[in-house]
Amino acid sequence: MPKNVDLPPASLRPNLTHVDQHEFGLLVEPYRRELQAHCYRMLGSVHDAEDLVQETFLRAWRRRSTFEGRATLRAWLYKIATNLCLDALEKRPQRMLRVMREAVSNPDDPLRPSVMEPIWLEPFPDELLGTDDGDPEARFSTRESITVAFIAALHLLPPRQRAVLILRDVLDWQASEVADLLGLTIPAVKSALHRARTTLSKHYRTPGAESVNARQLDPAAQTQLRHYILAWEMADINAFLALLKEDATFSMPPNPSWYRGREAIGRLVSKSIFGGEAHGRWRLLPTRANTQAAFGLYQRDPANGVYRAYGIQVLTFAGAQIADVTTFRTPALVPRFNLPESLPI
Image (tube, one colour):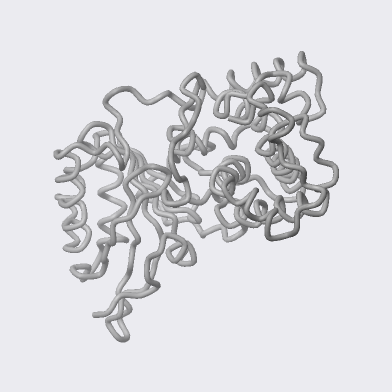
């Protein structure tokens, strides 16, 4: 992790003043994936995270003469990236999932209009995470801290508190290092961390042993995933509902409505997703997002029968049951998971 106590001897620290652009790229490229995950935690958007990491490398290249080797190269890059994220968050609307912010919707009411402004959290492709080399002493593991539930709760925090919590509890930085990065005093860092932890504890529960993710699914949960695909592709409402926990939640950003419980979800899907002649309406391709089971979701075009990208669907499991289904209804997300934009008939 990017701690100053891990500094190599001065003779082994890179001198960036005289490196050319190619050499510089070789030095910083190994940090791309972890910086993307860091910026995603800060911004809630995979697209914005990619842009900010590229801007981080550009800024680091332009300011390479200011790197004095008092911190690791990794810590220096994190400092640039974090401050770029804070600057960006001052100019952009806050991203969210409505399930964290407002009352549950009534499935008997009409669906509310979608909100197309960039206010929604986005899923993050697992393949961008790389290996989990997080500090075992950190409060939140690298993989737990990228789940949809954690990101949604994290984005209830003001940006600077969010940065402090990520740096302290996810990356396991020392309070003095965070203070130096953010230009704060150590007491201010400790105060911000306390407030952030208090808010997070109200909205996020650390998963218990019964919770599993896409890399830990046992055979029973894997079987449930196969049944889930069949239920969607055959528009079998009863089979779909049987896979859900009694108090499961269901949301479809950018639509602001969300629903809780099998009965309510069943009333919703029967008149919308699985309504009418729905057999064969949907196709699902397995993927992974936010370390959770996920699918590329495709809807059949009635005009020609081709299945076109509809969005990315992320499942949260509790044991062998599904506790949450979040469908990010943004077709442009699908190619980011290395999935095709359409499927043949």
